[in-house]
Image (cartoon, rainbow, N blue to C red; front, side, top):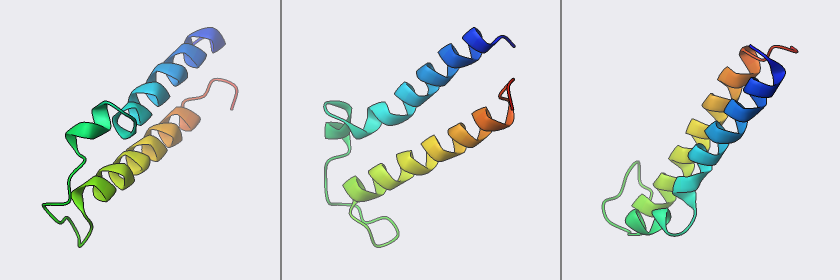
Length: 67
């Protein structure tokens, strides 16, 4: 995979991973009920997407052509 294509994939993946944590997409999850693992749903939503972004970033690191 070329470096240019990898950079484009990286930008798209990170944008899609963090989009659910900002307005207006976050408004879909902005509520207290239900509690998930003892956390309000809105806080769980943010933590979930941070973990998803970390996982995606780790996968991108492993397939990095310059690594």
